[in-house]
Image 1: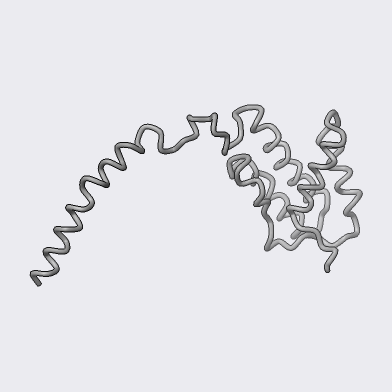
Image 2: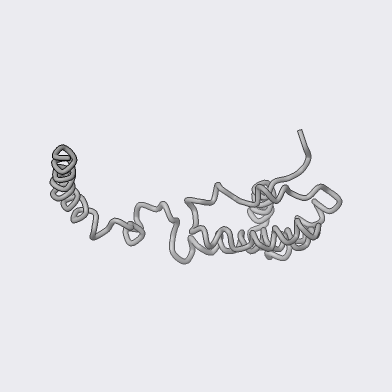
Length: 142
């Protein structure tokens, strides 16, 4: 097994550091990440993602630091990689405080079908079969 970390590994490590010292600064987390990884192989840029965050925060939040992570990988600069991880960590950490988790059932305003679900179901149920029937009739006449 390779000792090459993934971006997800680095994010989880940053989260562990943050949880072990919740009153510490993001800069402290960044410095620890850099010191732990200096001299080690950089993550594979093909896996520049943190998929476990999909249901925790909007994609635009958890991916905020990934371009900086990628730049750090490309320039082989651990400070840049850690900086990008910290941007994503900070965004994800602040999101629930400001608006709640994406998958929180209590957040009814997040429901994209609210207000249109019933009308859509009625419309599809009412009109789709008739339209399909007309298409079938036209095709059988030909």
